[in-house]
Image 1: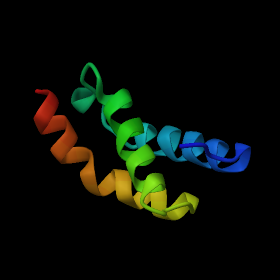
Image 2: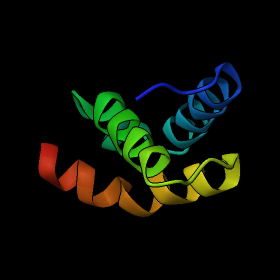
Image 3: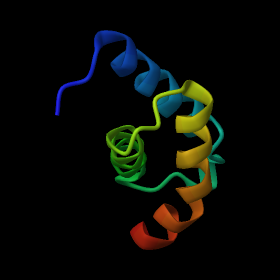
Image 4: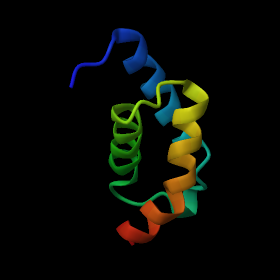
Length: 69
């Protein structure tokens, strides 16, 4: 799937925002990649706004951390 330059930039900003909200003690190996994957999946399903991508990834962050630990 191809994304516009603007959407890629939006997804990157969303990823950095979500990662900045993760406390250091919860930051586990592979977390950033898994969060990026969740953002890509949200975009593939039509979620293209910054706020929507951040909300989507933030909603999944605890499940992702649990999966990786």
